[in-house]
Length: 104
Image (cartoon, rainbow, N blue to C red; front, side, top):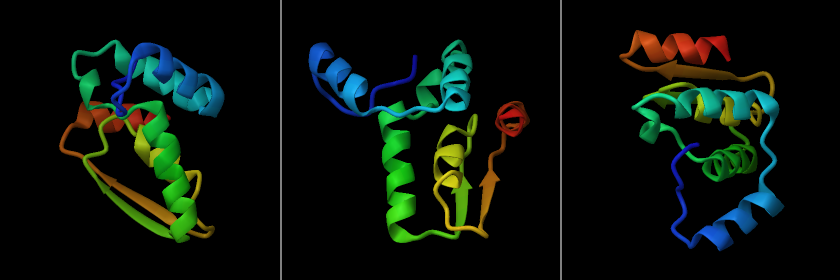
């Protein structure tokens, strides 16, 4: 699974995830695929993705540039919440990871 972005004990963290996380199947599948890779520590946690999506919506973002896309989890979280019409430009030096991001 992905790295935690919030420091708390296991019981409290699981409670937070159980009551607040609304992770679409697409993002869950991407997170699970990424978790199998040694570079998985670069993946944001699902609660952080939810927060990034909320911030995107709250500021009314129409255009986003993401530098360091990795597998695209955060890009998708933000893209789902931009004002339409809008755009998300993702940049990463790794063809391996940008290929994964493009699949999702």
